[in-house]
Amino acid sequence: MTELPLPATGGCRCGAVRFEISASPFFSSACHCRGCQRMTGSAYSLTMSVPAVGFRVDSGDPVPGGLRNENKHMHCPDCHSWVFTRPAGADFLVNVRTTMLDNVPGDVPFIETCLAEALPYAALDAPHQFDGFPPEDQYEPLMRKYASERH
Ligand SMILES: [Zn+2]
Ligand SMILES: [Zn+2]
Image (cartoon, rainbow, N blue to C red; front, top):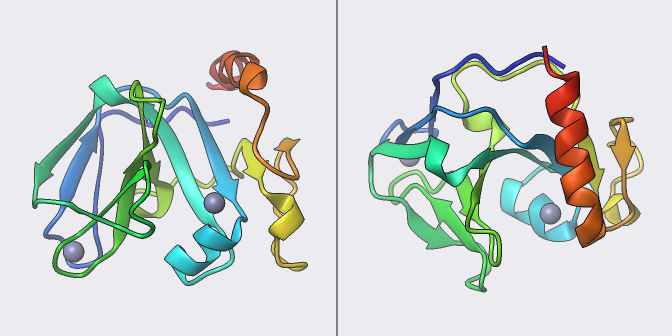
């Protein structure tokens, strides 16, 4: 797994929202759930889960979109790209959509979630695969493993 060069910058489709990541991600993932399929208009969403203290919006004023539930799915107010999510109950991290980065890492995502809902041709053969989401107690070991395999 390649270390994400820091700071890593990115932005939405139109460029109104720009952000910077200044801390190494906890892990990367792909989610195959139907919600992500619909919100991306594609087969799965891609995520870099980064420490909240290492994420900063530099320009633009992201607005909530998607399902207006306890997870804050933040979108560009102009082009409506889904840029990042502040997940409920995990305010120490921000889930940044990997494809919004200016330089998208070429590594296969570390974790694949919701494979039970995956389109049959879309599985990525990630090193850690889950039919749903990882059980709570597996996040910590997964983060440690991701950190140790980074170089
Ligand atoms: Zn935009
Ligand atoms: Zn999902």
